[in-house]
Image (cartoon, rainbow, N blue to C red; front, side, top):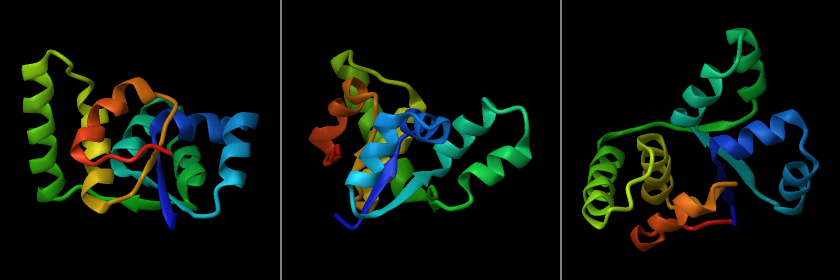
Length: 123
């Protein structure tokens, strides 16, 4: 695996120094990225914008483009029809990973497992 995307919950635990998160990062030999949606979610919970910038400075970012939005709409329509809707931010983050063929590292496997049928890979 060349790269993995950290979901917001995993990113938060990693920055807090959670030993399980740190161990998982050390166990995987790849580059780590985050979605701009995770940057937004993480930043909302911090008091200082400067701290947010400092905390995320070493990550590559997955930006949102029209392909990701189209995939997100497809996922949303499928999940709502099945009665299995998840948070919009999770759909967008999952679509970022699917379109860019990057597996996701998350603590919220219950939600993201619903996106495996669209090609999402969980680490």
